Length: 225
Image (cartoon, rainbow, N blue to C red; front, side, top):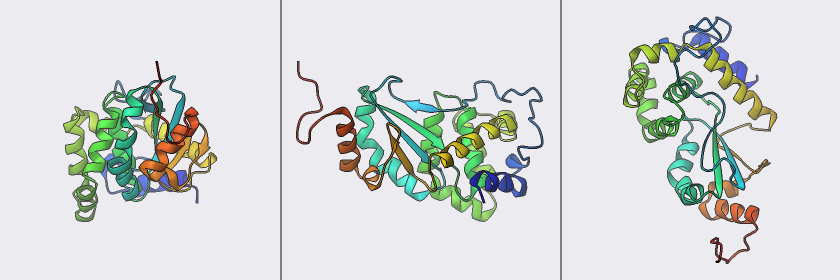
């Protein structure tokens, strides 16, 4: 079964009121536009848009390995993003519980482009609590609490998590990832080339960036005057 089909099935069967409609039922906005103004569609990235190195990560907020990357590996390239060497694109690729992951990503996108990564970080930080809430039937309260922390109020939460225009755009990201060969999370691409295990090790990831920049092992990454 294609992952996009799995997502639609999860939305149709979910006990989360937020995900009570499938992509075939029509947008709550009724206009073909997003239901919450400022919703971020498509790629959201950190760094310089014209950076020489582009890293794309396909990940899920319900994936423990993705959480580990963002807490243990990602900090090792933060300076390179800030300096303009690396453009980092995060692409939503929901994994089980798919309905929860998709609702969480919807909240992140409805919070706006400037806040998107803050919301994703919040979900990773509180991933254990999120999974526990799913087990105890309180996950919608958990999601609403995260949304409120980032400026998505009750009305926006309800509209956002029922917005078929937004869900269609996220399904397009999943389909695009599958076309690129993504079968699990996290999966990384550096300048269009799929990466291996080196992406999940600080030294390996930085060495791959150095190679893409033409920096020889052992030399300084800083440009000499």
